Amino acid sequence: MNDFWLSCGHHLLDRDAGGGLVVTDEFLKIYLARPELAPPPEACAVERTLHAALLADPRRPVAATDIAAIADADARENWQFLIEFRDHLVRHPTLEAAYLALARRGAGSIPPLFLNQMVHAILRNALDDCADPFVLRAAEMMFRPQRLTLHDGALVAADDELIAGASGAPVSPLVSMLGIPAAAAIDVLTDDNAATYWERSDRFDMALDLTAGRRGQAALGEALARFLRHMLALEVEIEPLVEMRDVPFTWYVGLDAEATQIGDRLWNGGTLDAATAERVVALYRLSLHASAAEVEGPIYLILAMTPERVLRMKPQNMLAGLPVRERETVS
Image (cartoon, rainbow, N blue to C red; front, side):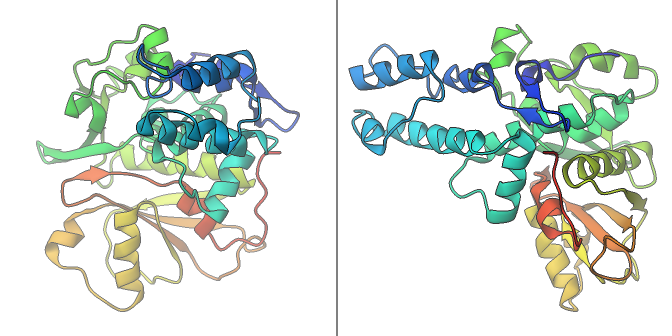
């Protein structure tokens, strides 16, 4: 089986008997290598001492007074974010359980960057046996913002960070450690080049055709279904629909903030103007076994982009928003 997404750090995580990811000291140390946390030469003695102590023992208790004593205000804020996130991780038996708790109770002040990194690792676990590069590329949309464009009549999603030419601080410090190029040419994923996905999966430089009725939308539906199976032990069918017309909204989940606003409008009997309707990237019909559902009829999943054509998926919306009777995560 080909390996992929090395930059998520999955090889630094353990697995429990149920298949969940167990946080290790080595995984926690990855965050200390981030440029926001590595003390610069001018850092005060308190910050340097704290960083060194956590490298030796990444689970070491850190008091609010320890952080308050750091001289630089930006550094104090970064350390507050990190320690809150670390403490949340170690309170839960698995990474999956930690993410599910955030989905149900709210992420608080935990940065979206950390949430995306959790999804990255969890999906690597959920898709461990996946041999379809189209499903894997579609799953990238669940933890990396996408920029959408029309090209030759097709709606194509490409990695937003790559398009923006981001450099300097990578999404994961492992990107630097593994020597992965910061930028590369973007190719649209096709049957002809799909075999190259494995060697370039950590470069996120393959675009996906999301045109209604084509393979990309079906691949995203499969990725979403596998995520739900892994996180909630739900067997579901997720079918992409070609258009949003005469859809009976008995229940819906917006897969991003834009889609939630659109769903709310339709739920309340409103209509969509042409510009808003064009921002709907995909519509799915989710079916689950009647014994698991709290409502009758299909459930719809909406995916939409911003007016600037950026798509920021929030997979936690599915975990919190599906009307299911029993929601158990990987232990």
